[in-house]
Image (cartoon, rainbow, N blue to C red; front, side):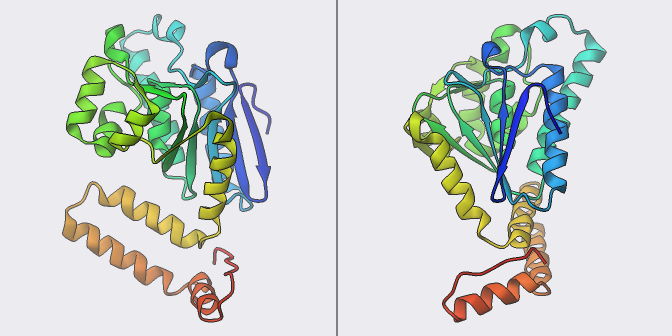
Length: 260
């Protein structure tokens, strides 16, 4: 499938999905949101894809936010529908069942920061800038910023960013836990590929159930979350992947998982 504003490349089970509007700092308009949602579904359904790297074209931006020209014309109902559409797109990546890694280069603001937060892991180049500047425009985050940011960095750090609208650099994002690693800009693509391939070597069913347990468990009590984890632990016991993983360990060889 060809996308007007996205670039998609798959190599040895790793898909790299690039938002390709560098002249607009890769801003999210309605068309890009729709195409990203389609791409997420396509990658979820592709049995050859073991994981996804999400990034932005050009050296200046991952995604600099929503397209302001679209927002300036919206009314109440259109604004709500736009928010729900964006949230559904982000959720499609978050609940894909395959690891999604955001490789953040340059500006990662507003809807771009919200999209990065929907990815399972975020690494950043040294020139990355993060923020939720919506209040500076007299609007609120619409793609999950008020919900994911406090879950990732804590209530206090999240409110500071959400209420000031200020930008932070990559090192500050690392300090508060918004990203897990910062690398030189010229090494970002290689580091992202290396990290995702390391993850993709693990059992795909184990990865899927682990991500699901974390995702669902955040909204549960500890007792409920532990029960969910026990269910997952029991489910993998019936898989060929578990047998292969344990056998490979005992035989001191790399495991060859089949996702079964």
